[in-house]
Length: 430
View 1 (cartoon, rainbow, N blue to C red):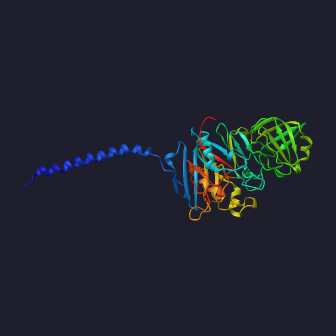
View 2 (cartoon, rainbow, N blue to C red):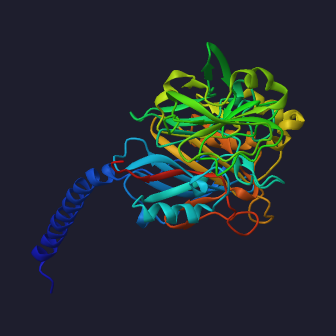
View 3 (tube, rainbow, N blue to C red):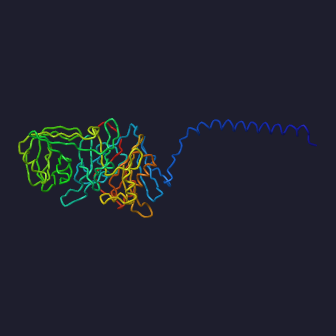
């Protein structure tokens, strides 16, 4: 027969045991809560992104990220990010083949840099230019290029595709000062040559000399010869090189030619003047004449820029889409910039107060990625938090190289040779 006392004690023991278990669970939960609160929160992606892939995350240096975004409009967007306060990273540029003439793949340029103990982490194709013409000017950049403080190239603003148009949305050069300030402006040369008390305006540096850009100074960075035709040319020597954003130097005229295509001396320069503008020049610039060249880039902050690169159209300003892009999206744009309203592969650079972004959009590949219009691209960048952005050379040139290889899918199926590269690289003392 069962003891009634035993029956009464069993529930009490069960209750005590359950109480202990409950207290244990509460204690464990209390210990776990702080760790949950400290865990990083996942980024909230824009509604226009189906998915985001982190590429090569195990190899990211501090302050660097590499993503592929799948845009709902049927495009794959590759983005390399750099924290602006990352001590081990910096922005830089590299000219293809170290001179204006000729082109080079980003893979080749980065290998060349690594041989010089420069460690690149990401690079995107930058400026527009001539791929090849009957004068052998393949590789001629249409845009600004400043490398290690040297003014390598600067054009005159022109309303042509590839150039910066002379309008508010033509503010399309990006530069970084030695103090790390990011700039995005329309940059003007403000260059003069003074001789015998008269001053002559210089239109461009290492650009095509014609009636639209009638006075060009060619330096050894261009190549061996100027490759001009029907230009008056004056060879200058005994001047200081390289050219910079704030520059002044005396010179001596050592040769005068009416035929163009003069050799560029290794420690000198050549001034080429279009025939339609040459008369006042040829009357003043004679052999053995002496004078002075002055350059002062505008805006003034650009006079000290260490690394700078140009594109052709501005996309975002202070987080707002350029009004001109909205007009292009609706009406297709004028003939000079009609490409802006079509879906194509694209390349771009953007930044905000915290980050720098190098971007490539794949296109012309049905079933994978069709590309973007400039308006699509600007709207998407704004969703990513980018506040300022410019358009680089796109199409089959659109390439994003990162962590040792090309990560996107160029539309021709191979990496195309380009004019210059915008880089994220390891910081080191220059």
